[in-house]
Structures are given as structure tokens and as C-alpha cells.
Image (cartoon, rainbow, N blue to C red):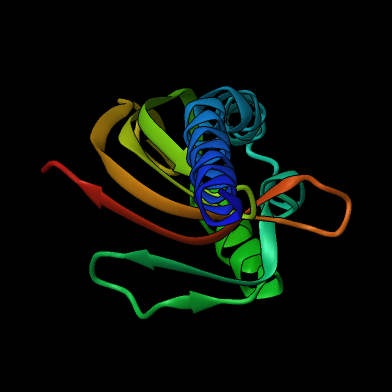
Amino acid sequence: MKIMSLIVVSVLIGSCKKEEALRTMVNARSAIAPVLLKYTEAFEKNDAVKLAAFYDEQATVLQSFIEPIQGRDRIERQFSNLFNQSKFSKVSWTLANAESDGLLAYAHGNFTMTLLPNGLSKAVTISGKFLSVWKKDHTDNWKILSEMRESND
């Protein structure tokens, strides 16, 4: 009887953990989406400092045709250089999916942004896809740990 009780308790505990993991995975979208919206607002304001604040200190950004950008300070400099060359507007990040184990999360989706390069009179719209890994920091806020963006063009 004691063995049967122990088995039942083990199964129940295992089921609770499984339900908790599923609940966390479902909630990742609702946790990441508002952060992504604030990220978009900072992008549209061409604010390199605010954008960099969304990244973990040890973050890595991977983009086509350039070397990986590692560290929040270098990411901020990259955004600053980018905003000195072009002004961005109408930025949209569409979250297709986000799942989490509670400490790490991944998200993927699509982006569209309109930019006006310095010296040109006509704006250009680019679109693409992204994949990002997020990490909760010591204040329980989600930060981008790794991000890959690729243009559809």
C-alpha cells in the first residue's frame, strides 16, 4: 500500500510540474509581446540607448553581412551608427511564437521597417524575420540574450 501511495504521489508531482511548464510556455507570448512593443517604440524614436537597454550585458546580435556584435555597449554603438546613417519609422515586429521554461525564452516572427538613408529623398521599406533568445535578469525583466535578424530581400 505504501509503495502504491508513493507511486501515485510521484505521478501527481510529475503531472503538476508538466502543467506548470506548459503554463509557463503559454505565458511567454504575453510576457515577451509587451517588451517587444516598447522595443519597437525605441526603434521608431531612433534611440540607441533605450534599444540597447533591452539587451543582456552579454548579448549577441547576428545579422547578415557583418560580424557578430557582442555585448550591450557594442550593440548600442551599432544602433547609434545605424541611426546616424538612416532615420527609421513605421517599425513593426510581429511575434509569431514565444515559449519559455521560466528563465529563458525564445521568440520568432517577422519585422518590417521603413528607413530614410541620409542623402536620399525616398524612404526604403525592408522586411524580414527574427529569432531571439531572452533571459530574465536579476530584476525579473526579460532581456535579449541572442538575436538573429535576416532581411527577406
